[in-house]
Length: 258
Image (cartoon, rainbow, N blue to C red; front, side, top):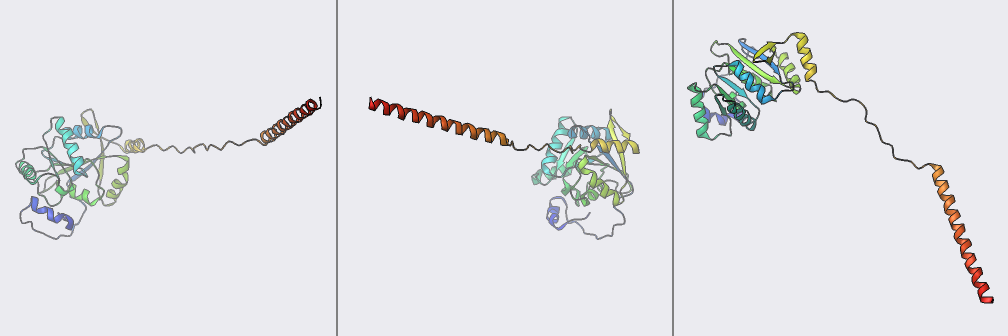
């Protein structure tokens, strides 16, 4: 497996005296790996994963998430349904990690939820299925994830649950030479989607965007006539006040003369 420098210190937790061999890859993934896509659509992702995992009924499946927090959530959701699940990520105490690795080597568990660290250089034998709960941000990790299966001449299946935001990643992987089979989970089993159905699934998954322009609210303007009317009313009021003032002065002078 390809080991980036930043992950090499972690190998001591999982491997004893690892050997480094440099090879030139001839293709993206093993030919015996079948790559399958299942659309999430409007379903609950945890529930869909659990149903897909049960329908696959693998000898051993490794389920990948992008973070250890999500790995814990997925593992807990699967455990609640009664599945034989373990987890493997960098957040586990060393003692617990060793226990998980021992159970994996003894083939006493059927599912393990892991982060990408588990896909780098860790030899887990007998993995029949790889399930991508999330597409990795770095697509090189997809290659390493699915490379956990189809070893020693055996066949392997890689299943990915995808959302509309994953479409660009899928297209990039196809350009690398990976061929995907489009499936859907319905009524306890898998259905192969036709080309027409695949197009419909893409349209259904594509989020609708409201392109209608928002109505601009113009500031309320005061009509010119209103201003003129208000000015005239004010002038009339001032005239009335002046007349009243003159009348008061006139009456006062008359009172003084009499």
